[in-house]
Every structure is written in C-alpha cells, then in structure tokens.
Amino acid sequence: MQIIRSVSEMQALAAALHAQGQIIGLVPTMGALHEGHLTLIRLAAERADAIVVSIFVNPTQFAPSEDFNKYPRELEADVARCEAAGADYVFAPPNEEIYPKGYSTYITEEHVAKPLEGVSRPTHFRGVTTVVAKLFNICRPDLAVFGQKDAQQVAVIRKMVIDLHFSVDVIVAPTLREADGLAMSSRNRYLTATQRVEALAISRALFKARDMVAAGERRADRLVAEATHILSQQRRIRVIYVALVSRTTMEPAREAITGESVLTIAVWMDDVRLIDNLVL
Image (cartoon, rainbow, N blue to C red):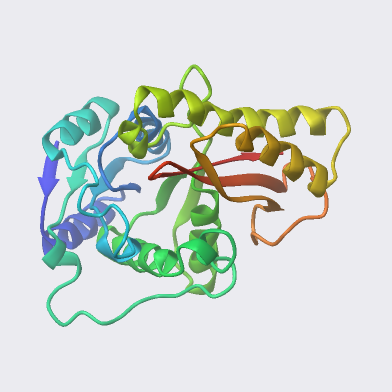
C-alpha cells in the first residue's frame, strides 16, 4: 500500500488510475480509525478498483473552542488498519498542502447546513464542504463512502455534489455500533468508564423512538419528548438538540415517514460532544 503526502502526487496518481480504466473509491476520514471506518473501506472495495483513504484532521471544521489540538492522531496505526481493510492508497497530506499560505476560498452550503449542527457549530459545515470538495478535486473519485452517523454531513455533501455538478456517487453506510448500542466514534475514547455507561442513553433514546414508530406512534412531538426524557435522566448529559427531520433537507418533520425521517441527537457528555441518529 502506498502513502501519498502531496496534492500533486495524488492528482497524478488519480489521472493514471483513470487512464487505466480503474474506478476510484474514496473514504474521507480524520484518522483515529475504528471498525466503523474500516467497514466504509470494505464497502468501497466492493465497488471500486482502487481504494483511497484520506487521513486529514481538517482545521477549518473546528471552532476555536473545540478539540482540534487534542483530536487523536495516530497515522502509523491508521495506515496499518487501512491496509488490513483493503485500501490501496492513503492520502495523508500535511496542513500546508491543503491550506497553503494565503488560502482564502471556501464553499458554503446555505440550506441543509443551517439547522441542528449549523446552529450550535455555525462554521463547521463550511469547513466540511470545503475540504470534501478539495478531496474530490485532488483524488478524483468515482465514488465516495460516508457513514450514516454523520447524517447532516451526508445530506450537506449530497447537496453540494448536486449543486456543484461533481461526478461522484455518494454512498452511505449504516452506523456501526458497539455491542451495547453506542455508535462507534473516534471521540468515544475521550469518555471515562462512567461517562461511557451514561452515553448509552443516546442509543436507548433512539431505539425507544424506533419501537414507538413500530407500535404506530409517528408524531414528532411525542417521539422527541420521549427521547429527551430518556437523555435527561443522566446527570452528565446536557442535551444540545433532539429533532425529527427529513434525512435529505434536515427540515423539521411533523411525523415520522418510513425511510425518509431521521431522529437526530446531539449532547454534551460533560465536556465531550457526541452525536447519533436513527432513520425511522
């Protein structure tokens, strides 16, 4: 497996792969890879000939008060994980390759990105759309694989792909969970044992809403109220939002529509920010 550090080298490789008729699959990550990421790599390998995993902790999607500096960086271990999962290339550029001195161009999606995360993290998606657009232009993928856990991110990227005419097929893999239900996340490693137990209230709230829908309850206010009640019983959890929304537009939904509505949750677990969601 090859590790690529420069933009020009990655662009040359992508051109060569396309000239050979190969389908390029991209898995964008910020590293600190867990089994959830590895399932994205394996899914890409089922559909593409050449698998590129990008590893880049993107500074522009972090607010000044967020955890950019302490975000885990373990490139050597991540490269080994990528190779074991079937990746062919790791694109791991230094910051100055992606944002050279004098960089001043950003991409902003102005509708899907506004609610939910857009309220509590107003600069976040500008950083996400900018870096993903750059990765698309650098790696030239035919398909890119993202995880459902970041539901709003997926919706924002899909809208960007449509609006800016990227020729990239966006594939979404289901959220991978630990045996006890907690959604896999690189930030889970921040949790103490006690926090880890309390964090299970997030998935319990989502599963309760799923069970309510299966039993015939579809009203958004009742689903949100029950999920919020479950979360509020944990003393370390502070709810940022609980909302039933359209999975494509992120607009509020009055009732759950099968396959179209997503219940999405963001909380502070003490000083650790966690998100999760479930398509109902």
